[in-house]
Image 1: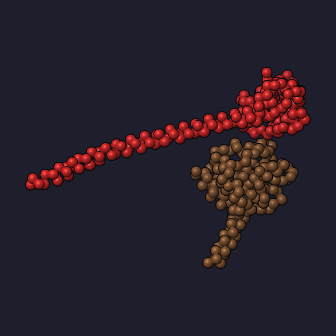
Image 2: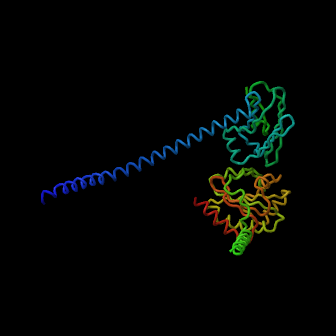
Image 3: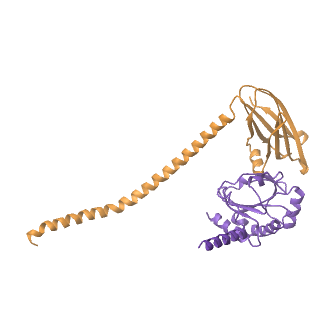
Length: 185
Length: 166
């Protein structure tokens, strides 16, 4: 190799070394980066989902507060205890002689109530003062007989929200279901 | 060229009419939830089927096409119930006895529900019977079919398979 070829030789050598370094670093960079990127993307998606859930919850609460302000809100809940003498089919609720809800229960819903669940069957607004609630329960009684029973309560609606619970329980000594309406304090 | 375009349009319209894919207003919208009493006395809520592919057929006992369709659907249900395809028949008849008599005569093996006040029919904007909607696992209406011709179950099945595979 003549002296005038030395610069070209060094130039080629340095290029080759640089290329080799790039080449060796490349696979490590791509695998790790893709792994990191996908993890970051996954975390971002999870964060977004959480944000959407939080936002949905806040909107729901805000909507409830706007539609049913605490000073006029009245909510009715249904619960069951034992339920050997009554198979719940539907609940019809009247407030001041006006139909407000007629709820049909599926097998799953009845099962959830029997396991201790409490269902909010109605939420609405009422002005302060005296009101009457009538609940009509239909379902199957003992010996597969159709059963329809009503229960009513006159309650006083104050400034705060009013919560009323309709409880279906068994009256063992009479082998009959019992329908109780009570106000939450 | 214009002549060809018009002929093509008329052909497509005729094919669309024959295959029954007419109403596409509810497609890709969330299926309105409902709870109805079945002829067996149990209540069924559509939202409880979330996670499964559901075929809902609106029908009436006085509709001949509906009865033929239900016969086909009953056979389909027997074969594909295990694969996760659920079916609900919603009758728009006035009397409960009409629904139960017809369901018994046809031998429908899936829940036959009675839309007493016609509210569910209104929610789904049923204009002609029979009317079928296919709902995916997320509770979205994915296909609608109005009217019926014999053998159309294959079309439902093909679409249901696609939805089951998603």
